Length: 85
Image 1: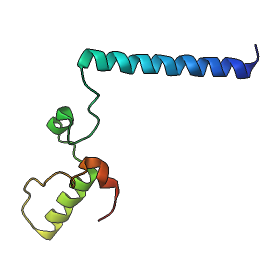
Image 2: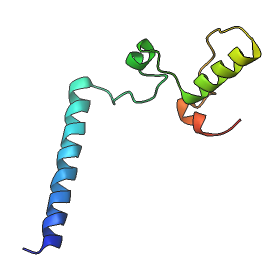
Image 3: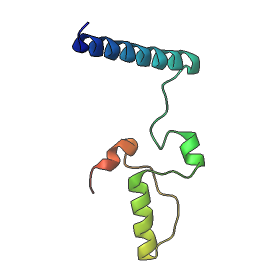
């Protein structure tokens, strides 16, 4: 077998195993993996926040404003944090 065909076969098998693992995870948990920071309770418990939330918190501290909890990043969730103000 040529190396090109072997690489293609390995890639297809790897992709198939990944898809199978994601399907099993979905079946067992009954829901998708929570990867959004504001939706994942474990990240909240560890104090991990969205980049936008962290920047806004630091800016408030520099201005001497109160350090109250801020609202989640806009209405689009933390995925909207990549855009500038």
